[in-house]
Image 1 (cartoon, one colour):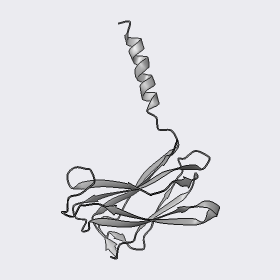
Image 2 (cartoon, helix red, strand yellow; image 1 turned 135 degrees about the vertical axis):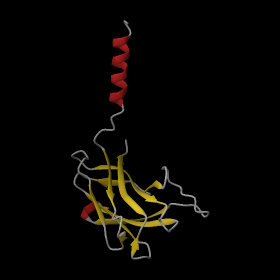
Image 3 (cartoon, helix red, strand yellow; image 1 turned 30 degrees about the vertical axis):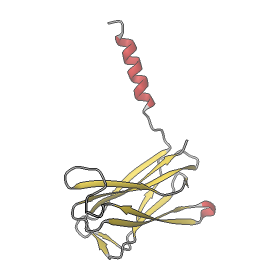
Image 4 (cartoon, helix red, strand yellow; image 1 turned 90 degrees about the vertical axis):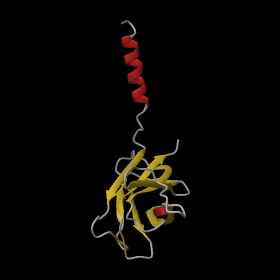
Length: 155
């Protein structure tokens, strides 16, 4: 019985160490299920949970899709503020399936999630707008459920 307070204190300290802090931003937005994601539609994310100073880190884009998505990959254009208030644009190819049609993402049932980083460090400030749009050669994409971004400050 004398060890119970010690174990409780250690457990609280371990749980406190798991806090990711305020230098991470993670958000998903729903895509139109019935009508699909149109070519000209850009989904915007506002980095409102970051600290009060700009942070440099890795930016990932993620997609949640189901078995009705017709293609092997998904080409996306990511826009975000760069240095000197110039909008920077990067192109990302998410390879969602192999040549045999097996999905790379994880999930269960008919829903999968796949994420990929942008290939270089990105600096974002609180309130930065990050835009994501698809640049596939079709007008409307179906089978996509959600699109999201994750920003993790580098230590």
